[in-house]
Amino acid sequence: SGSLNSAGSLSGKWGHLRIGGQMYARDIVWRDRMRADEIQTDIDADLSTQDPSNLKVTAKNLVAYNTAVELITLNGHGTGAEHQLDLLVQTSQERGTLHAAGTVRHQEWELTLKDGQITSPAIGNWLSNTPARLIVGRDEQRLEPWCWQEENAHFCLRGSRHDIVGWH
Image 1 (tube, rainbow, N blue to C red):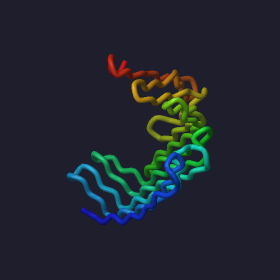
Image 2 (cartoon, helix red, strand yellow; image 1 turned 180 degrees about the vertical axis):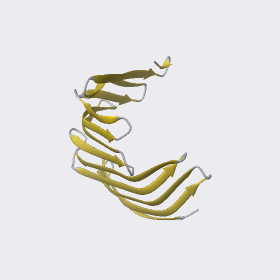
Image 3 (tube, rainbow, N blue to C red; image 1 turned 90 degrees about the vertical axis):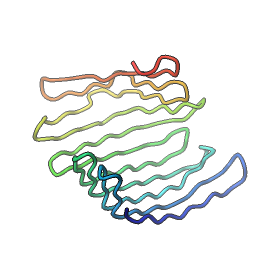
Image 4 (spheres, rainbow, N blue to C red; image 1 turned 90 degrees about the horizontal axis):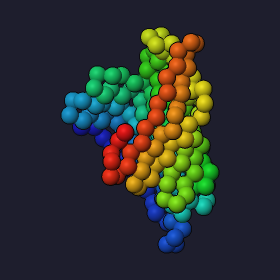
């Protein structure tokens, strides 16, 4: 249930297409498992990845599987050759932020994840202490070691997926 309004455009010549659009959703409910009071998106993207693009996504008051999130924002700008993404996720007591810098080349998206921070009364204040590369391609996805630290504790995430093998 809820309402969704959107408008979009596709312009340019083949090989240099540009997509633009806005979407606004209110009071969205899906199978009693997910709910969102408000979701807004605004995109202006050069599909050839040569010219600058912009992305803005804001979601307010979400509940998914009994977990409440007050705010999610994702902002991006740049070209396919060089772009930046900033993510914020906030609940009533926790807050997480992440900055990523990326590039698209040879049908792969390569992101450098950095400046991650999670603040929570339950688990403390965690910082990603080293940048990590995330590679997303058609046949392979790979996260190189991404380490987080909180005072004297630390953990690292790493993983990869290949079409033939699956996740490991």
